[in-house]
Amino acid sequence: MRRLFISFLGTNNYLLCNYEIKGFAPVQNVRFVQEACITRWCEQWTADDRIFICITDEAKKKNWLDDGHTSSSNDKSDFQKGLATRLKALPLTAQFDPIIIPTGKSEEEIWKIFDQVFSLLEEGDELYLDITHAFRSLPVLAMAILSYAKVMRNISVRAISYGAMEVLGAIAEVKKMPQEERNIPVFDLLSFDRLQDWVTAVDQFTTSGDATLVERLTDMDMRPIIKETKGQKVDAKTIQKLGQQLKEFSAVLATCRGRNISTSVTSVRQSFQRIQDLDILPPLKPVLQKLQPVLDSFPGEEIADGLAAVDWCLNHQLYQQGYTILLETMITFVVNKALGNDGRNRKDRELVNQCNSIIGKNTPESEWRHPACHDKPITRRMIAWMKPQSDLLKGIGELNSIRNDLNHAGQNDNPGKAKKIQEELSRHLDKMKQIVKRSRQKD
Image 1 (cartoon, rainbow, N blue to C red):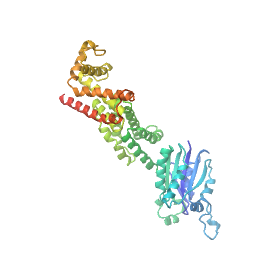
Image 2: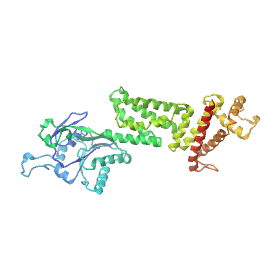
Image 3: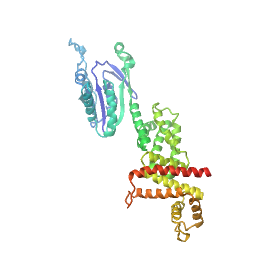
Image 4: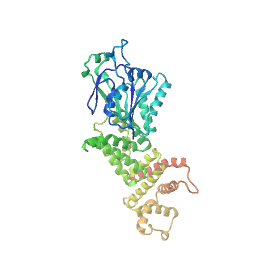
């Protein structure tokens, strides 16, 4: 996995300053923020890693090469070393190269810059980006490149630095300061990039049901904190756990783990409640609030949660899972109501479909097969409860037929049409909700 540093070099006559990067000792008495960042981040890099400085033709003359800002008097005291010379003096193993880019004065030039910078990136790169002197539209362009490269090159962003000279005041005031007082903080703007990732991840979860990105982000962001604090940072562990539980929740629905739906939702809800008062990135809280409607739709009771899970599947195009969960939820419902059992016993569940067939075909007791013939009083009890509910009988029969069609990939003599199967799930769900509601009103 290659590490990559990319920065943009401007044309101004930069002053000698001291750059303060969080977590490192200040880099003192340097003109270029790039030198400070490279000193702190890149000195331990290997020959496989790379450093790219993007420069215009003017920036090359003014600041990449030596003596770009000397006066016309040829006074050697005005001599200034360019960034190329300064980087050569550093104990670097990683190769550094200038990349000539346009000035960005037209849309065509901006697209050319986009292509040039993107072409520097390789699959899986770890990127350190400095935007201190990124002029005009380049900061916005840089963020667009990051988003694009995460998808197209699977890169990870490790730092986005910005040397904030403006905190010292106007440039005229800074020039008057003694060099030892020109202490410039280098802000790490990585959290803004991560916020964009969070927006994408939560949106993917709420629209597609896939929590993979949420889990990956919580692990990526929280693991270093947990390691540094030896697991004592409760906030970080809670956020990491939420990501793991959301991924587990989406996996439970995608794999039709009916018995785990309620417990999985309860776990997510508990972790979600714990993070409400945590000290996390402020804009992240509204993003996470998008999860609230998902949690609210699951009341915490097995049958209701099963129906809510079907709603989830319907809204996220998980039709095969939706039909399976709906049928199995209704089987549990029948076992609950007819026998007073929890629906965990396999024979009880098999008996539901068998009784549905017995009622439909009016099969005499002498022809009952196992498990119906094994305990006829129980079978009669279930038939007595099911028989008056014609809509339930019809619904279970149709759900069985569609699920079999789906499970066999339509490899039968009369396969259903894809569009109809999608549309019918909503109708079946509404019907089963009415049946459950009507039954509970009678209780």
